[in-house]
Length: 121
Image (tube, rainbow, N blue to C red):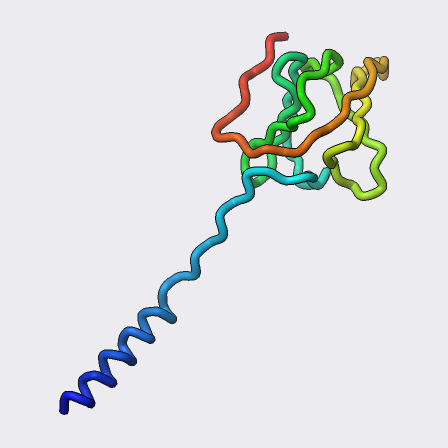
């Protein structure tokens, strides 16, 4: 009888282990690239840098501050991979007039908690 109870207990533990939800992998805190199609919003600030929002939260580019970044400016990437990666250069321009303000080099992307600061206009 004890042996039977031991087998039942072992089977019960095995069933619980199989029924337990799989652990989700920890979200990446840093990565080399962001896919252009994943970027849902951007914030540019000359002193705070470049922020991009994806379905996984906000990311800050570690490329540093760039004097060309400002609110209401757009970015153009010249990458064949449809990504924005560390080492790429983005051109900054006015979306309406198409006046160019120069280029900025990208660094790695770091995930941040919460929203980035709203840049002064």
